[in-house]
Length: 401
Image 1 (tube, rainbow, N blue to C red):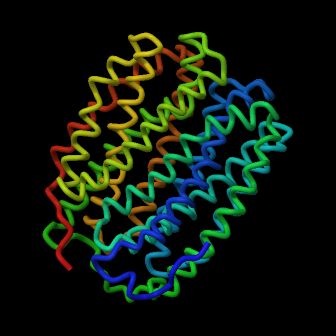
Image 2 (cartoon, rainbow, N blue to C red):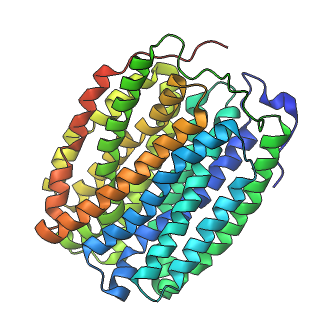
């Protein structure tokens, strides 16, 4: 794959779509590998006789590993860019996947989860920065294009597990090492673009840390609100990511393959919502998108646990679309709050959602063992009410360059 390294392409106002496309494709490959873990849970549960709590603990180890490292990696690369760290991160994900494919016991499964988490922690902050640099000022659009690749990768995880891994068993995960190798090649080219265009320079330490029109207190309050909104969104999504197939199998009697197809529909809606959220935020403002996408989904989440199979599929698609539109807006909003800390903000947000998703999955797994999987979906349906906190976000537009 060839990525242009002509410096004039990076000037303000020019969106470098070849770079955004490559970043999105790599996000697709990265998140496809990551999504194979929860998609393979029914296989692993059967092979190792795992409880729901153990399934949740796998998610916890994977996501907490990623969450603890990402803010530190993002903060470090704000000052010391490492463009060629990206293929190293993909290599870590590949090692994790191969470990999962041939793990003989639960302990080795946990080791595979750690390698997956490390790979994700390296990938997201620096690639998100590259997307912003290639945006030409259309930051919401760039963030949506970057993130939608990840959403499609996540969406294809259940289908890949259903039609490639499931017929071959646990070892079928190893086939996806080829996808990791492809990602390493493309990420090496992205690193070359990043360095050749003069972006990968050590920070002088004089970058603007916060938005010029806001006080430190306003920025701090806004960041806390954004994290609370992400808490609501990703605890709720944890119920779908780790347990939606089990919910469909228990409540409607579906087999594993059919349940994973329904999960693909949900993830496809998430991908569509991600595409929409960024450009709408560019045009109408990030705060409006954040407000509508979190609190606006509440009526649908409250209804979901009380309807039949087809309405469940329809409502889950609506929920996935509306909820997903928030994240590109939240990331760009946070980057605008702290323009000199793009990597740190990206790492914080991506790391937080991995961490809170992992903790949520573990807690929800224990709750499912105790009270049942349908109770989990009943309880989680109230979480979007936290979206009312968006009232406390200031109206922010990125300062003119």
